[in-house]
Image (cartoon, rainbow, N blue to C red; front, side):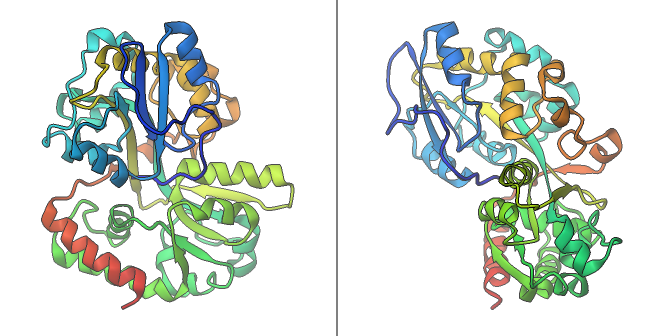
Length: 361
């Protein structure tokens, strides 16, 4: 589901997977692990990590479905996981080799079970929401202190969006992220595959298309941080990264992230083992290591995404643990919904409609 920018700070990215009983080959999102996680795992287990990165679920899916990927641990978003499981892309996990999985949040794992029945093939790595990142001062200057920053109307109401066009609105370049929230704003089923519903969502986005500066799934991080744009539909952790960068720059750019009151997507990035993994035992050891409260807390502190181990909260930076845009309260959680899983027919419809929305033709 996400596109993250930059390469991991670790000097561990290599050109391809290695094959050895004392190696684990990991394929993860860019910039999505703490700086010392790999070194700690290698010191504790003696297993060398070959760590490669990607920047989209489609890249991972292509490698998996082509076969013989050579990877032992991969991190698909749950909606992609759901359609890859029937294709035989993953082997069932041996939970006896992942005792730390007992610490996973039961409610979150139950939500993931909609994509992985029985939680047989994967466990949660990180999770988050889709929402709105915005420049507090720029939005207030144009819309006043009562700007609807807690609503999708900020970006989907043409009258409101037109007033923000000069400072810059960006949308994610992802139909699977944009259509569900547009449907939700319209009061329709966010999981709808009805062509008429999807057409209405496309028309909604087309109504504000003249006011959208660009469609991109990572550029908004630096642009928000630098004050180049003022509003972005984005992923929670990425907006928090932009906020952190803006603060470090010290240029007076104040950013905020909001989960719209109408509701939004709750997504999960999952750790799974490919069916043809060359080192499955080492893969289980790696997953089990990540699920230690202190280790997964380190990752949360680095990437600004929540993890699914409640016991980790005592090790999470208090500013992160207490931030309701990262760890939403129960009343907000109740209004979240999982990413939809689309069949081939719906994929074709979405591709056609999304091309029309993006190009304005």
